Image (cartoon, rainbow, N blue to C red; front, side, top):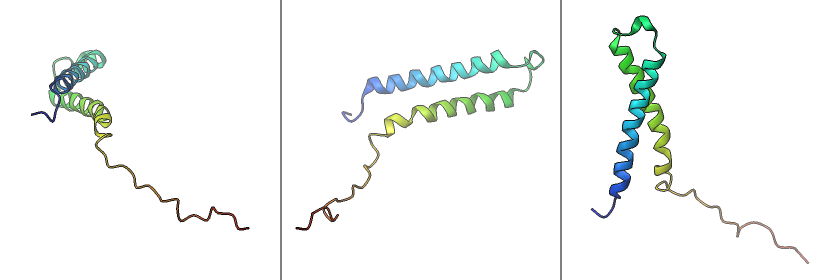
Length: 84
């Protein structure tokens, strides 16, 4: 198990829970007072949508180092030498 960092897994879990809590807070804070105890399925969809949107942005930096590098073009075939 030396291929992954335990601290990174713990940080990812904590950030995921915090994002979920912030999504629930935003929903509760901005909901209409008449919708306080009804329409649970749309609220679940909104919370999951906000959570997936934020986590999809946060997953980009860890996947960047594992991406294959772009192919480099060779500059040896270019006509850069001067003719006398």
